[in-house]
Image (tube, rainbow, N blue to C red; front, top):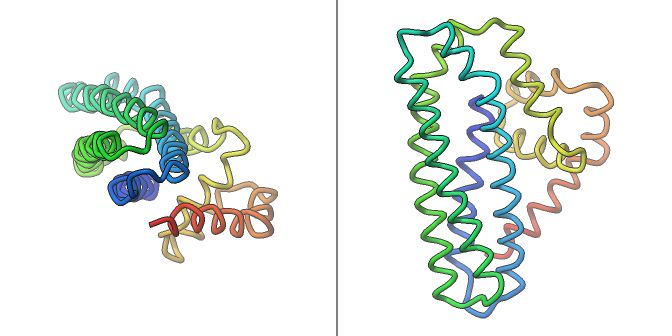
Length: 207
């Protein structure tokens, strides 16, 4: 989970910085970053849907003394959904005009989303993950991890894998790749690494 959270922390911060730095009138960059923002939004929704389906119900059932904390996680998901709706709406407006006022509104919405996201992730890592370790079995936790990758659209899997591995240390990389089927590991080494590097260069070299 920490590796996944690292991705969302990084990508939300990138999106905020890239939008804020875009010059007025740069319509191509506004469109590129709006697409990037929608990919980020879809990824976070997918991650939270997995938690909503596979983690919170089990904790409600088994960790009855901690109902308030689990409720807090669910309410934070709802608050994040509100911020994501605002980000998507303001990016959509900005990509049509590339005007400074629309850019600033989009950047402000991403900044607010990032604030709510970091609060949620910090709470989840510090307060909830110890409960997960206590109340979920190893098999149930494995199911969460599998759902996170298996339910992604196939064309997004290599990009997601690259995002997860980007800041991983050697031990984390070995641990995570060991859970990827052999065909996926081969595809990653032959195609995925270069594909991900190209996509990130196109995105990040713009600022």
